[in-house]
Length: 489
Image 1 (cartoon, rainbow, N blue to C red):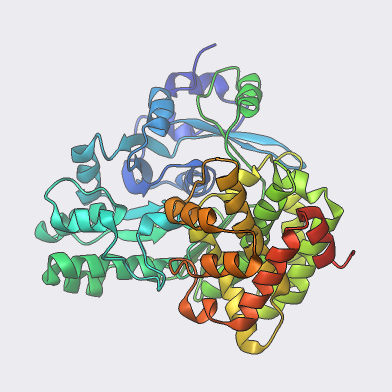
Image 2: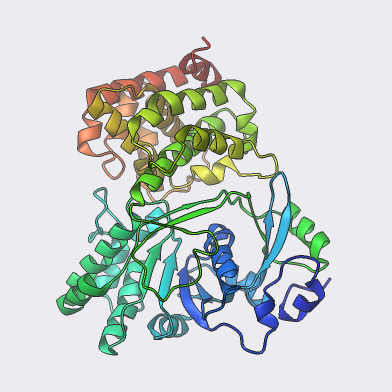
């Protein structure tokens, strides 16, 4: 079977939507560089840009992986093309052509730097996960981070995204080229402001003149992104090959729901993202908070509790009536009261829609994948709601159960000698090694991890007692503990 490629596009016309502009004499030039070409980017920002390209403009994407060659090895032989399979009540397929090339920064640094410094590159978008920003617990650039230190003090090519972007911006400054607009598309609270602050803080260490230039000219909007995009498996590859009649090395699958909210500060020269469905908002934080608390917090809770119960996917976990009841109770009694949603959002309907999305049998979203990087995700997804409820004297017992489940998850990984995917894996597994099974001791050890828990939170007795009670109850077994916290026992 032939592979997907520019040459194969014409044969697919009429079978499914294809990037017809790839067959035209004048193709779009690259105007966007994207760092982190994972599944979410290819199902989300690249899809929005694909729709925008139908309205014209030089907005093709140069996708850059910092180190991993996997995406480049899969898509380069396919001319950057791949299939997006939307798996929901109605299934659909589309060939995405917005990604014109996939580069590997560690291996193709000169080409990456050339793309970033080109005057034609107007935007840099990013999905590098929370840990890729090298921030400390206060959301500022961690100047003590080993890789940031390496970039600041060394003369080699940068290894961090922040170091890479600064190097490119410094070159643009020297060439009298305006800075590109940087857009974080990661689930990071206040992501645009934190990214901008991190770049300026880095620049202050390297060249105060460039730092001053960036503080005046760098545009970095806050954003909120949403769509469930599970990892690609052999089943979707076979499904796509059957539909297309050609092989695709790395198709992407996602649910039908997709959302991108961008702070309305972009330059006028922009892709036609709005025509593709992007929402431009004056205040993204209200949308962001709603998503982090109503979707991401339950998602992470399902990941840790569901894993302890032995489930493999989100859909599997959602078939557990006690677990579903617990999640619904946590949302209604502790998450919804923790914040004020945006006026444009029907919060009850939004929450119901999220639970329906979790219950989509066509999406096989692994709990293990959601459980990755808990030390980075929980401070964004769960801990802010706990802090707000504590300050308002509202309950936190069910949210604390999610934290206790995370602690138990780490202990179980240690005891089972299984890999923990987390940038703090080493210190967290060291904590697990010290755990005795006594709730007071174990919880105190975990709450002392200051990269996750602020001193204010770790020293709060109400929070400590709530996590301790949940952790102790989980010792009786996750199913029994869940029944107690869901009010069934």
